[in-house]
Length: 281
Ligand SMILES: Cc1cc2nc3c(=O)[nH]c(=O)nc-3n(C[C@H](O)[C@H](O)[C@H](O)COP(=O)(O)OP(=O)(O)OC[C@H]3O[C@@H](n4cnc5c(N)ncnc54)[C@H](O)[C@@H]3O)c2cc1C
Figure (cartoon, rainbow, N blue to C red):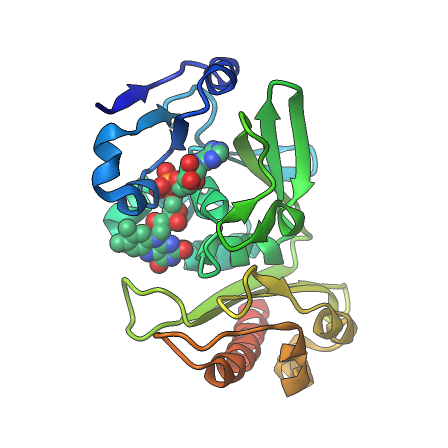
């Protein structure tokens, strides 16, 4: 028979996890339940969404803290600086409204699907992952946290408590685009998130470009990011080369062939940069 525990604090949650290895963390449940199917009726769950302080977005020091129980709808509705627009666009395309109301950003990241839309948008923003365990808290870059398909750097008994997004200059813009077989309720064939910070002269001072569904783990495009520095935003799309996709390793599957994914990714990179330029006008 299923067991369902609702701890009242992170310490209690960590304590329960340390004494019962069978416990499975659940937030919105939109990945957990479909993956378990009928086995859900016999599983043991640790529901973290009602832990006080775990839901919501706050600014702390130089970063924005997105608590692990924060849903996609929370992000979409939150009054946030313009550089979060790419993350909001990703959120508006996660499943449908019902999924966005229940599903969390942390769940999206920990589930570690190569097609996780949130991971791509957060990676472009240099997000870090805050983790609590019996040894205390630690923080690591999102790029190191997701280690492979369905694989993350969580040790047994650990919980993700927040995603930390570094603050950016006021003149920072971002965008997100996803390609699927249809407009809504679709697993991405490729998706891209771009963020550009502008200097006082209006040139690109820093860029973050992340591509998803084209490798086991979402990838940044560091060579392109370096070439974009000093470029006027309106010319950013012209700087993108087909060879920028060389760091990707797309596969053929039921949704698309590898070559198509590669071409689509480059087209999406150009379009997200054009969208950033438009937003900066
Ligand atoms: C119909 C449908 C459409 C969808 N469409 C999309 C889509 O368009 N794009 C997309 O990216 N995803 C999509 N998803 C997948 C899913 O909705 C998202 O990944 C969502 O953000 C997962 O969040 P959750 O809170 O529901 O995670 P859960 O299902 O609760 O958990 C997911 C995993 O993370 C673990 N976990 C959750 N929170 C924590 C934590 N704080 N610490 C440690 N481990 C944790 C769980 O144990 C589990 O392994 C879709 C799902 C469905 C059912």
